[in-house]
Length: 476
Image 1 (tube, rainbow, N blue to C red):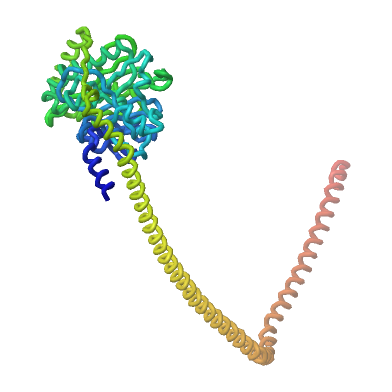
Image 2 (spheres, rainbow, N blue to C red):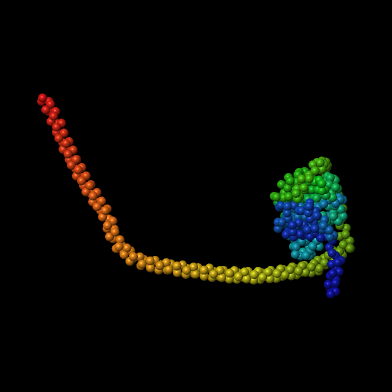
């Protein structure tokens, strides 16, 4: 009991000031950090965070959300950070933090931590994210997508996480931070209610070049802004090659989206393009042109990490390590136990539902089978009775036809015998008529023969006479 009480007191003594929560890929947004996106909607398309290699991080510090980051584990670099403008302040010496959950989500180490604190608690630290050593003697500096210069106090400290940085040359780093600070604070925020209605996205497009063969060096950097005060809106984009001392060039957000991954939409409804204010848009462009004409000035750095060198900080570090070695495993075990219980409950409910479903299916199948059998019996019975009645009708008809034929034979004979004399008597006139017709035809035949014979003899005599008469006339 005393051990549990001591562990509880230890957990209360060090709750962990920085909490960068890794959001589940199944979640549509960035949880508490949706407030950093226009209409609480993250970019859509290839930058929507649904790819398995992308990690959605809600960057928190002292229990409050500070900004959101979409991180690419294969590149060990962020793709973009979403943030709001608070107030520009002088920068300081980097006190870089890492996000343990990016390397091991199941370990239970929630929150941004110093790298030396994570090394003792996590075996595979650096598997999916960059570490401070990846920038040492690499020729690259840590370029913040959400620059600390745009914030102050706790907001600024929260930006010093390696999940918010990409490797860039010193010249690019100085130019990028100066341009970001001046564009946001002097060109964008003044035309958007001092930044209260301003939503910012800054990102990097990874290349095949890697710092220390590990962290992808960006081939370009970009910034997108959306302002909507409820009556008017405007949006603008900036981009530049991450090489040399190139400056950010202004372009429409739609054109910027075409240079990013396919199908990307940075702002919902294109930052309400239907209410776009051309006047404010022009004023923003004029301010941006004036800033780009200025020469970038590198800022001096000062330390923000004095607490790390104090006795209180060392004690806090010890408590944090003790917390990670004692409370964190217990919390992880309780989480696993809770997940196991949930899975068992789900499995039990699934089994019960499956059994009920099988019983209902069996009852339905049984009733269906019984219904089919009863219907078949009824149909077969009707068919049998129909066949019986049909057979009876056929046999009755055959018997009646036999009786009819048996009765018809003697009647027909009797009728024929009785009617024979009448047939004979009735036939005599016809026979006499036919005989007379035959005698008349014979007589006509004889007459025709005699006539033809006489004609033939006449023709002969006439022919002979014609032959003899000319000779007699000639002699005369």
